[in-house]
Structures are given as C-alpha cells and as structure tokens.
Image (tube, one colour):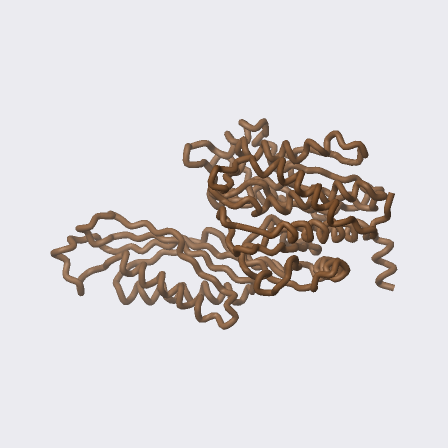
Length: 435
C-alpha cells in the first residue's frame, strides 16, 4: 500500500465520483431536474442506504457503518490508533423542496470517494468518519429542526422538539423517526463529546459567486455567517378602508412596509457588502381589500460573518421599531427566533487545506460562507474547517445550481489529501512541531 502523502490520479477520482453520484443523485429527482429529499423522509433514508452499501462489504474490512440515534449515517475508515479522536467529514443528503442536486450532497459524494481511495493506502493513525447528516435543511419541520442531525452529535438538540415539531401533514418529528425505525426517546445518545473529535472538515458547493469572482475552482472557507432571525408583529387598528381618514389611521401593514424598507437601508449601508437583511415572509390580518390592516407579521433574517456587524444591524433595526411605533401609533413586538454568532474556522485547518491547494496546483484562497452548514453545529470546537467548490450559476436551493465536473473532481482530491493530513496528525507530531 501507499503512504498518506501519495497522491491519487484525477482519472481515478473521476471514475469513483461518477459512480457514487450516478447511484445516489436520481433519488428524489424530478423530470425538471430539481431534487426533493426532505428531512427524515423515505427518500433521504434511501440515499443514506445507497451511500453505505458499498462500504458494508468492502474487501478491505476497514470500514464500520452505523446509523446513530438521530438518524445520521456514519461510515468510518478505521485508523491504526483507535485511542485517538477521529477526523469527521461529510455533509447532508436531504434537500429543500425542488432544490439542486449538489447542495450538501457534493460533500457526501466527495467524502465517500476520499474514504474509498484512502482505504487503498496504509492505515492512518486517526480514524476518519464520513457522516451523512440528517435534516440539515429546515423546511419540513421548521427552524427548530435545522441541522438537527449534526446538532444531535454536538449535544445541542432539545428532545422535546421531537413531539412538538410537525410537518404540513401533521406528522411529528417523533413519528417521522418511528416510521424510519428510529427511537425518538434515544435521540440524545447520538451525542459525541468534543474531546473525541480531532477535527471537522466539510466540503460544500459555494452557494453564491464567491469562487467565480475569485477565479478559483476550490477554496478554503474562513468563516460561516451568523444569523439572527426575528418574528416581528405590528399591532395597529383595523378600520373601514373608505371611512377611515388617512391621518387617523393606525395601519399595521403600512408601518410594516416602512420597517421592511428600513431593514434594506440598514443592510445597503454596510460598506463591505457583507451584511444581508432579508424579510422573506409577511402575513396580514384581516386580509380584506376593504379593511385597513390591523395586524402585520413578518420575518427578518440578519446575517454577517462579523459578529459586531450583525449585532449592530439588529440594534439599528430595533431602533427603527421604536421610531415607527411612536410616529404611526402602532405597537411593534419583535421575538428572537434564533441568534447564532458567526463562526471562524480554525487557522490550522485552513492552512492544511491551503497547503493541499498549493500542492495540487490550485491558487490557495479563502472565502467566507454566507450560508449556514452542518459544521456550524460544532461551534466551539477548536479545529473546524470547510472548503468550497465553485458554483458556476451562483444559484443554490434551486435546480439551476450547477458545477463544472472538473471542479467537483478537484474538490474531491483536495478533500482527500486534507483529510489524510489531518488524520496523520498525532500528539507526537504536534509535539515535534512545537519544538
């Protein structure tokens, strides 16, 4: 067998990657090219099953395959030192409704190829676990189920959510678990203490045009955006649309509209163009053409890779809530749904990826991620990393999501060699480097 530093030919990666993608990607794919594999659905489970099939009977006998109590599928390439904490990689195979075929899935496909190729080499000291995280996307069971599988591994789920959360058909998360043979009351058993994890490295498609604009096919990720989400309710006074004079109105929707524009103004004022503020949903009562709205409820999503910028935007928006309340005679309530700080990736892991990029003839670069990922569930761990693969369309959560196949192959090669270097690290080598 070869040692950990030996490279593998791109042609070999190409063949393996095509095989894995061709096996799994048709699951949930519609005639229009979109993909729908919702969290804890039969489609997500079928994708997990196909992923693990080739590892269960692998001739090397070096793989261990299991499903944890949260429905995450683990495929572990055993290392020579089981006493050492393992390296984790992977992403998710679930999708939003009518999403693209690469979001999340590319990281699982590339991770599978990496493990198959590394199994052809001499064992590395540390085990490497590929995880197909369950329920990274939130549409089926709402925001509380976002990244549910990875958060369960990190010990950051509320077991009460399994009975509380339900999809549009009334199926609770607990019932979805049970339908797949999972035991809801054991979900906390999926927790893996951080001291058993050496590093986390996730490959993902760029969900914008960062790499296109940078002119690189693969790049290290410097940070994952934070996200503050608010549910804002404006209480006004319902009234007759003809009889109520304009100066006497307490129009909840007009006040909400002013606040929506204020949110946009706050975001556009950011000189770095890092801050984004989005109002993605709005509801009005009573919702009649002849009635002045008495209530308007809308969502706000504030994101930045800089914590101070994100916090300042929220503070500025809350000042606007107070101003509009006073000027329009309405009452504004803002409830925080989620407030997650940005996460900076480990400089050591970034450097490992940058070194591999350089060794493979790719200009080393780093970019921020303006979307959330499973890696974010492990916030607080000292060795987190991600790498992006170029998205030619710049679109995601859409069937228009698109990558060049050669970029996918490059990403898989960079992931494999980065994992090999992380799994080769031991306390002894770290001590030698310190000396």
